[in-house]
Each structure stands twice: as structure tokens, then as C-alpha cells.
Length: 416
Image 1 (cartoon, rainbow, N blue to C red):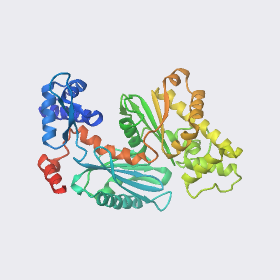
Image 2 (cartoon, one colour):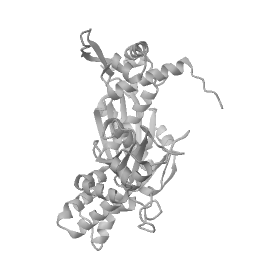
Image 3 (cartoon, rainbow, N blue to C red):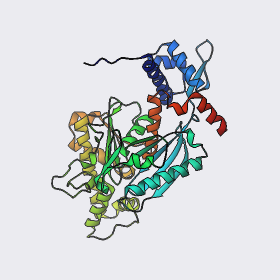
Image 4 (cartoon, rainbow, N blue to C red):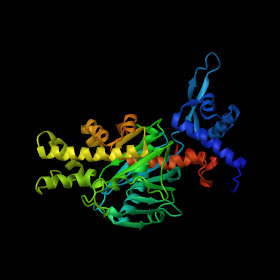
């Protein structure tokens, strides 16, 4: 077996990453609290925090009493150290949001796509123009942007070059990263939208403090992020989590992916609306887009037996899909997110839980909590923005030669 050597530089970066991550996710904290939480010695914590303060990444955030001794300084990551961008690539629009490091949104750009099966060049164009406009609206220099996270539909294959496979919209091996690279020099972090949402929910939402969870995204499409021991399960080439394309009905409804009987064909917005249209003998569903049509269906449930039946069936399919997750992964928590999931969950969460219980094994069902997302219907862009933040934390704040302590201080001074 090959022996892995740990250098002084590796150890330094690991210590910086440990301290910075704890401060970011749990701060403000005093130095003794950081030492207690991380297991690092007081001397190591003192040295690391001194470096991070010198570089402008960490600042003091008040003081706390120390039970009779001198007050202890509280430390936190400086929200204005840099900025991150999150992009939600949906099937009907591209949403670009710019945040500071406290994840306070500073700018939003929302652009419609020309069709529900957008060509890659249309998506790339809207990402790049949205990125330029968001930076301009926020009034921050481009060199202060730490990175751009992009949550996209379909299978995102990680490798030397990120490619996207999305048969539901006709994308095959789309080299999204290289197409974007032609229009921006900023660091890019591309992942599936459900995985991006999952990370945000674990950091900031209902999953905070949990180790074993499944974050599901039910929108136009359907996906999931499986979290085990606090880490996202990605699979061999990062395509794990395509829950929407698990078979719920053998030989069932055709799915956009080319198969049949997929869960997405029954609980995704398009599938729900199509089943409602068929139940109405082909009459159009009220509303000009998917969101208004789903809302009209939910409103009609108390006055229309057809609407009530479609929602009851949808609840059953969704509950059975959640039961499959419970039986496969034994999570302590399932979070229902995505705009369709939140609309359904706001009205039908108790029924969804009951339906899951009918199909899940008794023991793991008793152990799981099924909750709604706390981050809202438009949380994929927020989640995507955590991807460059995660990179910053893993690197211990070392973001490359272009962002040395001197260049950071110079950029900050020029911005003020």
C-alpha cells in the first residue's frame, strides 16, 4: 500500500481549515471555545487565528465574560472579506444571486429561458450576462468575487472538465464549464441543483446538526441529496441522487428521461399538471405557467373532486417515494424542498407523512422526521453559492496566488 506523507504545509492547511470552518458555521466563538470544539491546542488556535486576522478573513466580534477573568474576544469570519455568486439553472429560467460571506444577498438577477428545453448556449448566455449584471448591481469589484457556484438540472459529471447530461431537456455531454470559461475568469463550481440545495439545508436549514439526512427537491423535475455522516453521497461519477428517475410504477407513465413509470412523471410539476389535464378530459389547466397551474390545482382541492383525487394520488406517490428513501438509507431526517414540494407540503404534509408510513418499514419510519425546507422555494441559487464557500473553508482560506494577504487588503482598501 502506498504510504501517504503529511507535510508541515498539509498540517497547517488542515488546521486553518478546521478553525475557519468552525468559525464560519458556528461563530462568533472565543479562542477557548474553538479549541474545545476542534480539539486543537490553545497554542495552535492562537497561531491560526492570528494568521487569519492578519489576512483579513477573521475579525473580532465583541467580547464575552470569562467567569471572573479578563473578557474573551469573540471571533467571526468577516462578511465583507469577499463575495460569492450562486446560479440556479432551471428549465424555465436562470437566477443569479450575489452574497457576502454572511450569505446576505446583495444582488439578484432573474432571466427567463426561451423554452422548457433550453439549448446550452442560451443557458450560458444568461449565466454570463446575469453574472455581469449582478456584480454591477452589488457595486463590488470583480476581483472580490471568490467564486461562482452553479446548480444545474441533470447529471453533473465531475472530472478534469465538468460535463452535464440532462436527457429530460436533450442535453448529452454538454461541456458547460468550458463554455462558461470562454466568458469569465472567475472560479467556477458546478453541481446538480438538488445537491447544492442539500448542502445549504445542512448548513443553514432544517438539516443543521444532523448527520444522516435526505434533502429532496420537487420542482419541475425531482432529485435528492443523500447525506451520510455529514457528507453528500455522490456515487462513482457524482450522479447519485437521481431519485426522480427511480421506478414507482412498472410500465407506467412515460417520463421525460425516456423511461416509464419514473417518480418524476407522477410528482414533478409537469407530471402533476398533465395528470390533472387528462382527468379534466383534456381541458387546459388554469394558469399561464407551471407555478400558477399547481397553485390553481391546490386551491381547487376543496371544491373539485377531480382536483382532490389528483392531489390524493400525488400524495400517495410522493409518500411511497419517500418510503423508498427511508428503507434504502435509514435517514434521521428527510427535508421536502423545491417549489412544488413546498406548495404541496404546505397543504398536505401530514398526509404525505402518513403515506410514507404506509410503505416504509416500521422501525426506520419511527426513527425519521419528515420536514419542510426552511430556505424557501428559490434556495438552489443560495445553495450553489455555498459551493465556493466550501472551497474557501477546505483550503483554509488559501484561494490561490491571486488572493494573497496583500492583494486582499489592497482590494478592500480600494473598495472603501
